Image (cartoon, rainbow, N blue to C red):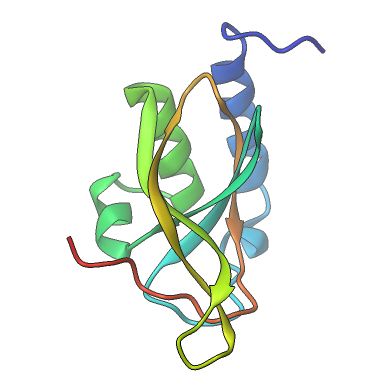
Length: 126
């Protein structure tokens, strides 16, 4: 299927609904953390985004994945911290923030919860 800027939002909505059809996947977390991680598939590749409970609550009611997909579809973008595996100060590895990124509607293809097997660092204070 050829993907264009016109049909990307419809594809995103469909994929979000598919992700919602598996509640066990939507609620999966390997390690408790102050941040919920989500894998967002874009035209350029995958990005792992982190949202705090307060940021998720600001997106409205409903399942987390649906809130994120709805925000992207309605507002045209979502801004969040980009997380990646990095070295912890104590020498181990963890998921930490790399930068604040905005994902635009035309770039987003799929969003799904991401269960980190490593500790997740909280985002920096603003």
